[in-house]
Image (tube, rainbow, N blue to C red):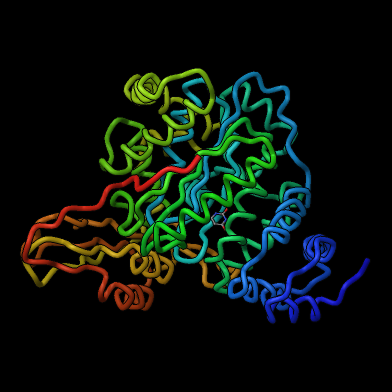
Length: 435
Ligand code: URA
């Protein structure tokens, strides 16, 4: 059956419901490059405003999931659990998390994304490790999982190619923040991984695509529901994204901060959220109490086992393990600018959205699908919510390569920080949980 894309766009634009066959046709044709980007962007924008019904979301997600091969990991002799984030600023949690969980005997076939909108992407960050390849032959994935417990890959021309294309298009067309588009993008990738369980990090706040707990709860319930309909247990934690996680925002500098966590240090919020997610993943893997899972996750860091797994992962995927052993070998921008405060008091805002937009302007993210990113640029946030600051103290250190990009980034940071006279208590990191 063939359809007219213009008519389907009009139907969605006017609030109509698209029939399952039409949705399958759109995904198949777009994946085969038979629908041009301009028509697909127009449909995506209509979905942003009109949403999708449950009747539409099911066939749309299924069509994305089956747009390529689905992994067969029946030869993997460990529980297979993954984690995915809905996207945040400074959100490098997956990078220290995966080696910890793998070191505890769980297989993690993580399929991640690139930077999306104002948020960073795990694949871009990993590629700042010299030589690291995020493309692996699907047939080699189970061997690597049996041997070291982890692979970190992206979608390819054979693995969920529909998401590969739609994701890149959404990034460059302002069509990211939509509950059905986010749920179908995440769940199509995750269900293609043949999982025994999935833990989701549903971000809430200015730097997230979901600005309120209510919106995040709706998104989490939708993804848990898609998991249920595929007999895949899903746990979602709603986590705070009103300010960046940790200090580093960028690509290479987020790898450096992740390595610090794997060495037993790093900022407290990154370390504690990483351990919370590791605990959830180990519990989902089976027969383990929260206390025991938590203790094993901490031990994987303290014993050095997780760090060793990160070295093995890097070497297996073509990366240079010396970069992990010595983070000074990561790419670095040539200049530094320090933004300081002109007020004394307590930081009451350190806005994740403004900092995310500034990072993209600096070159850490893409403005068009074709853009290369600058792996060495980024921010080291020096003042976070609740911190006491005096006039002249640094708010953020900006690593940059290009003066005009620095200026554009500084413009985005104009109102990113607010300083109050009274002490401020930061909000909790974990705001809720949906199972
Ligand atoms: N992560 C994804 O994989 N897709 C989205 O749409 C958002 C976050």
